[in-house]
Image (cartoon, rainbow, N blue to C red; front, side, top):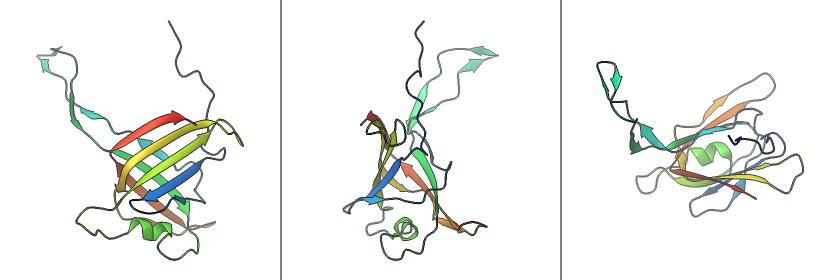
Length: 156
């Protein structure tokens, strides 16, 4: 039986990059990410409840409707101001009744300083909720949460 998950172990904290490109805008590289806070759940079809009759599973478990994925990251608040500031980016108003979307690309190197690694691309990401700000003992934090329609993983 073949093994799986046997490649190089990756670690987001080893110099990853997190790039946000607002629709119709320029790419922005997000800095000051709080360690251990980046995470996502991929966009997949929902799993339907199994068909069971009197305790007996009648069929294989089926897929249902398409679902969106979720992506989360916390950053250390900075004194930046203006439209490219993270907090303002996530509270951008709609111009057409739709939440403004963006593409997010996360590069995770094979090791610190590596020129190769894994690239996750999250398309049509839109804020899941308003950004939140919390004060902290060592730094203040801004929390960003997104929904996205699709994700891909590729080597770079």
